[in-house]
Length: 153
Image (cartoon, rainbow, N blue to C red; front, side, top):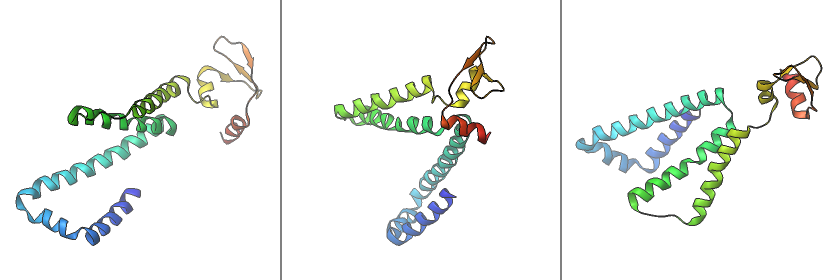
């Protein structure tokens, strides 16, 4: 629905503020086919993004998606360095290292929630006892968040 209403408002705003430029763009018969191709490619790209994003979110979590999307600035600057020979300030490189290392740390360590604990342990009848892969009983204190998650299951 975001895409539908965003498209409608963009279409209305385009005709209100940019109608002369739109008329000039479509009036040139030589540019009509490339223009329509770019518009179609943009629509296909947005549809693919939303499909892949929802597929990613069913398999992973939103925090990893947001951290990964922040690395897109790195690719944009890499393109500008290669194509335009523009080198950004040192602060950009420091921020990029923090973002990329955040993605790796988050992916390696996880978010330490109840569901990641279930991969390694099976819950026993008692709330604060877990059985690890060796069959040993491990006692652990559950946080309030984990208790709420247990209730919601």
